[in-house]
Image (tube, rainbow, N blue to C red; front, side, top):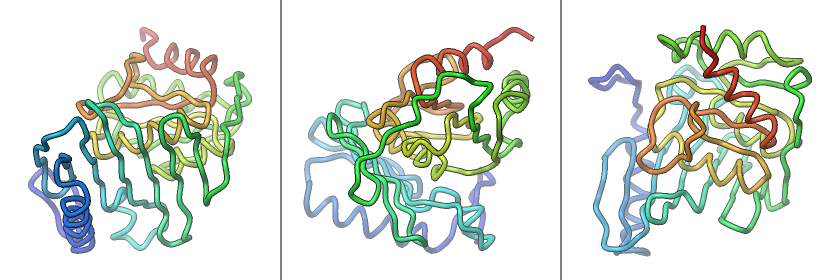
Length: 229
């Protein structure tokens, strides 16, 4: 594992996987754009852009831990319409397409529909990612719920789509290639995902995001995150 100029980690696997994906996309969809974590943007000639994160959770991958994933999204006019969270070590995969629901290993899944935050299972990202005012929102969420789990990464958003987690929270260290694939997986399963101000996410998004198992729960989560100190 080595480090980029911004301090984030990268491995040979990240580079090799993204190179392969780009070659396959160019061959199959030559008019489509591509945005990847490792090699940046390629402008296309259509409304569609593929958003790629070959290893989401490179810190964990490089440290020999298991909670990493490969993320692929397809955006139409900037909005995610296809999302894939692939868990290579377990051989399992979440796939969600606009209007088609969310599949986990080929089986339709649904979020829990939980609306009571006091009963919620909450996944909180690496605490180092919550800085400035976001740290106050993090602490309020850390004091909420029935059970909290930590640094689950993108697999936690997949677990939300299966009804196993009710809230996922990430801090300001996300970019589009971390975000786009999560959106269809969460929403097609009945959940909600947005930035902390409730704005819809897109290929232009970056920063802190939250996802919840139901619209009512999401409203409560956003209220806690944006509450004045």
